[in-house]
Length: 332
Image (tube, rainbow, N blue to C red; front, side, top):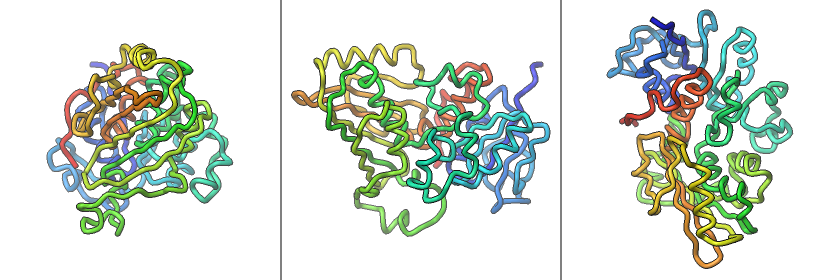
């Protein structure tokens, strides 16, 4: 029998960590050997995953001994200082935080209010967006999975940018379910605060904006996120002045995503529910006069986070890209 890849999930009690555990638990080539959580340390895995056939207890910190890969689902700047130790131990690291998404270290004080703790590692990181970086992911030791908003926005705009069909005035109006804020309790995600209401936030600039600009060749973008009263899902509606015809634009998207297993160009504008609980990103291309209107829908916890991380893992370790990603996940 072929040896299984031994994996750990650091920060397994957050939404990204829990999603990663559920996906990896059904991966036929993975052995989950460590799950870490400071708040659940010493408690059995069944405390958090009652429906999974996992035995063992949570530990507060991962030990690299015997591991092949760590899925780091720790908060921003918590895992960054540890990644170098994991890499030096010969592990591959798939990071779900924002720690290694931006190539320019000088941007971290601007967007995260502190210097990057390991700037030398930034040049070793590959952004975990398979539709754009599949070849680089094959040999990557450090993979930085992009944010949920940025994944939807980049996939919505990349074909148009690549084809030279984007004029000026690029606007991304994006909306997210509440799980995008993470699992930690807070007033901003309290049921009474978010139910039956809709609002924009981070008007001055969201942290995912520099990821979008970086991956779209410095394209000037106005990005405004909104919080909607649903558990999961991202819908990004992108507007820009169109160079060429809408037919040329649609052809560019179909060509760009031909053969991609998870990003699909749809004839109708997608809803978040169509992509919910899946690793799909659904993209529709249309126009109002000379203004292009491109919409993209995905699940923020799967294609926007841990599903994309597992997709990158499959590429890096030579597995079929769709392994463990074709069935739905039901929680949260």
